[in-house]
Image (cartoon, rainbow, N blue to C red; front, top):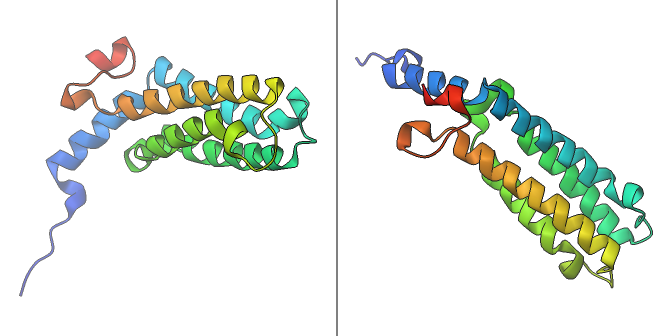
Length: 150
């Protein structure tokens, strides 16, 4: 008969959770998450804010990308240990946002759409990269802010 050990009590799991808690509990990480959520909301609403809602294909694309970005970046504060891999998905959404005026069906690559999507996509990509790098402190990579250095 075998006995089942409880992985939750393993010291490595406790240390990893502690590291993730330190990575997300400092002001820099919280600022990145806030900026990311604002970026996602703006991306979803940008066709109506920037004035290109008549370009239906890109408007729907930005709406879907913005909502997906918010979903990816929204869980970091409460469950970083389970959601940090989603930051790479957020990076992909940011990169696609940058190129979407040229790859979405139709002629939607106007100055307004290109400027909007390149700026929002770059901010989204940078926020995703910052969140992806935040939990890597124990492996020698940079982490968020001075409080994570201790």
